[in-house]
Length: 111
Length: 114
Image (cartoon, rainbow over all chains, first blue to last red; front, top):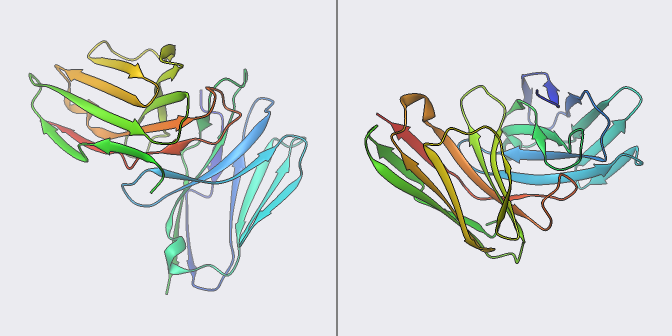
């Protein structure tokens, strides 16, 4: 069964605005990862957050993790047209032996 | 450029054809993966190889046959496919076959089965 589920399914914003995407999961995890996919291309790793971390930053990206609510959020600040892509969360599943991906959020940044 | 290459990038095949997808990683990783990505569905893990041994096979039909001759190369052999097998097939690699590590993805092969 699907572990991570992203919300919203699609998001459209203006360039310069912030974009927030959420991910919920069902079982306990060791880590949660976020990936980006440009249309028809492979996934690119953005950030990994461990279960004992609450927040992590990388450039314009900010990821939070709330293990009590089994949820994570990805914030992209000062969005750019080049941020237009699908964003996926992935968790290491019940046994930590593989990544399980959600269905993704499609982000469109209008210039 | 992620260090993982896939060929071909696009493939159109009939249901009676036999073809192979190739993946090569230049990162020195010891684990490789095949994923299937269909429209409006989450990424599906198909196969996992660790140190050239298959460690995961997610109930994939036998018309898909993986091969990992060494830690840098991974193949997916295809035969008698169905139209519903049309999808983007992604290869990935990581250091260690677990969900604990970042995975590096290739650009994918867009497969169309007629």
